[in-house]
Length: 143
Image (cartoon, rainbow, N blue to C red):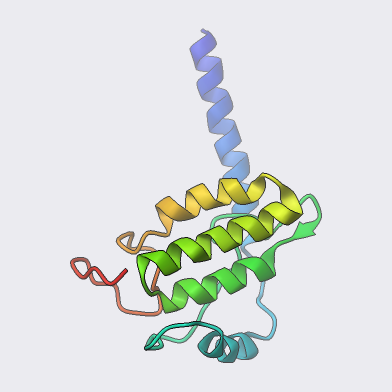
């Protein structure tokens, strides 16, 4: 009987969290033209991606938490993910996001870091994966 209560609690918790994230992701990015231009200038890669920069703020995560807005940190992180690069560049990008978010909302950045390392991997066919400005190629390892 105790197990059913735990399972029900986990399911309710997941529904509440998912709902909060979906509602939070319904924001409009202001100044997208400026962000597209800045994305091309603000990344350290030899070749810029063929697809225009896009962002949804903090992918699969609230853009603000307890009244603290972390959208700008996430958008800067998205610029690096759009451009892609080496696996070392990805790790540094993720560590930078972790550090900046933790400075505002410790230990939230550490939690986000774990999710990013798993769900942002370049082999995950998701619109937020490492190097998402390039076409997705299953067998090409350019990370």
